[in-house]
Image 1: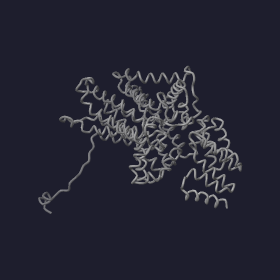
Image 2: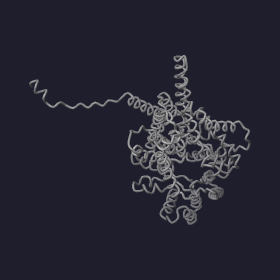
Image 3: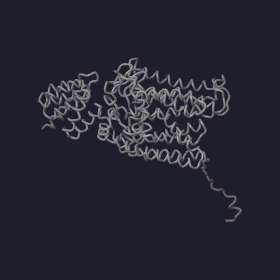
Image 4: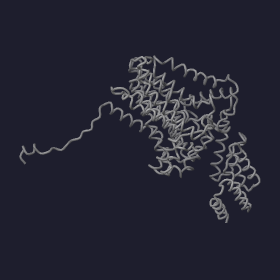
Length: 566
């Protein structure tokens, strides 16, 4: 073909996709976040539904029905008495099922994805707010490394913690966005997103209420780092729409919470002595013990040895004396956190933000102002631990800048590598404890031998294995710690029933029902005792108390037992 004709022919269009260096660096860091998370916690994908995850299984019919979205919005988080309203977390379970089915692997996979994204968003927030890349990288990486997060990440029920922080970070990033010049209120047209993100954060878990005061501080840093006077009227009015949308998102959540839970459970939480003995303690002992718990949270965040899934009665005894070292250390941490917000406001803004993040994130779970549903749980430190990550990042960043630079750079890299390896190994091992209920209960009994819940759960695990001797030993030990835990009483009754002592079994099943928080499954066990004695009508009576007029279920249970007995 002649050359001139070739030149006149249409040439193929070449599409080139090029990333600028900044975008490329962000993508690389995002990949690092995912790689780190899956390296440490990837084994959790092989895990099962454990402990409170069973509530997801119990509500399978609701969560798998695409037409039940409105019911999820009007549903308390499993029970009204718990005083919890988390529709976003429930929606996330429903979407999980839609995408991956009802296998636990899909739930664990999404937890890992959300966790990695949280570390990346922390990096973005610090980088955009303070324009310090090394601090931002360190903050995101250290957060992902903290082993105390294992419970939130490897435990499906920890999804609420992860989502609450993730949506809070999205709200913060929205309010610090650089807005293009515009006329009038059009400049603030995207701030509705900040309100939506905060609504979703609160709908994931109530602890996201800490995002409100943090948002105010973040707006302050956004203005002051750009050389503006935060107290000038024009600066105040410029940020008023953002504040209005954040408050609107909060108000919308609170209104729905009130409608679903009612006045009785809007703020009140019904819990037992086993889950939170502080609810039943006098005022000062509750404060003294709560301060000790603050010390435990902080020390286990930095020095994560003896991590545990259970701190319930009586693993942390009530403290009646103010002058003990753990309470005094907790008070010191609390006062330092409050003072550091103002102390570092000008000289080290990241430390001021970290102090506020830790303080405001901790107060809703502290039991200082009002008792919560539990005395202590490591997953509850997920939100406030962002502040601790900022402190560690600041220290490492300071070491990098010391002179002679070459020597201290080696030292800083060595510290970071040691921290990464040590924390990763602990997180990896801890994730393994959450893979099965048996491993979880065994580890809990080892780290919390004084907990009635841990010993009872371990006894139940041995019972399911058919090891009645060890099951009885653990359940009797649990009774010595506290004789009023209904599930433990019920499980001990099962042991006696297996041993053929129907009188003792019946006595224990009745005790499990005679409780402020009765274990209703004991009705079915009473029916089993009656069936073992040939009292079929009596068995129907016990099952009727549990299943009401559902005669089909009642007869199915009776027929299954009689067929098995033959």
